[in-house]
Length: 208
Image (tube, rainbow, N blue to C red; front, side):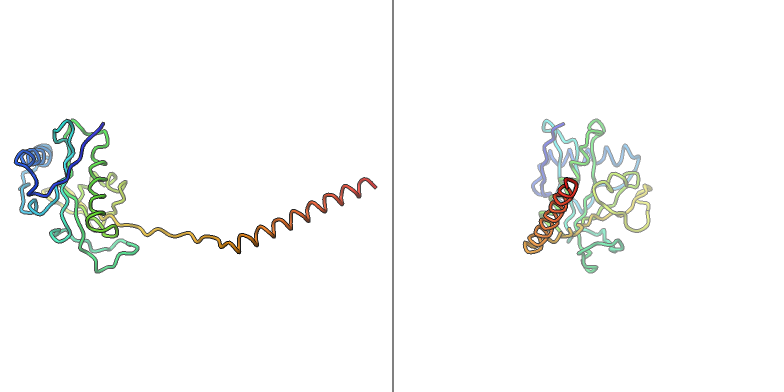
C-alpha cells in the first residue's frame, strides 16, 4: 500500500488539515478508546504535525514535540552509550494513530520511521527520542529500538510507560595493517613450501 507523507508546523496547517487531524484524534483516542479527555492542548502550537495521506485523505498521523517544548523527561536510567547524563532534553513523538480501516499493513511503522528520521535530521543523530507508550504496544515500539524506562503509570486510565530511543555507538573494527597481512602471507607460503617438500621426499622414499 502506497502512502504520501507530509510534515508541517501548526502555522502551515490549513483549516482543512486541522479539521481532519482533530477528527482523527477524537475518533481514535476519545471514541475508540472510550476515554473522555482534553485532546486539544496548548502543545499543538509548538509541534510538527506528520500526516499520512492516501488519495489526499488523512489515514494516519503523529506529532513531534521539539526538545525545548517537551515536558516528558527521561532519567536516563537505561545504559545509553555516548549519551551524557546531563542531556535530558529530547524530542518526543506522540498522538500516533492509524485509522481503523488502514491498520494491519504496516502504516504505523512507516509513520514512526518517518518521525524518527525527521527527529534525527532536525535535532541531531545522537539525541535520544522519548515517547509515552500505551503498554499494549510495548512490543511494537521495542521492535523500533525504543527501551522501556521507569515504572508503568496510568494516563487517562490507560496504562503507559516511558520509552526512549537511543543511538548505540557503532564499534569500529580495526583493519589489519598491510605489514601484518604481508607477514601472514609469507608465513603461510613458507609452510606450504615445507609441506610440498615433505610430500615429494615421501614419494621419493617410497620409490626407492
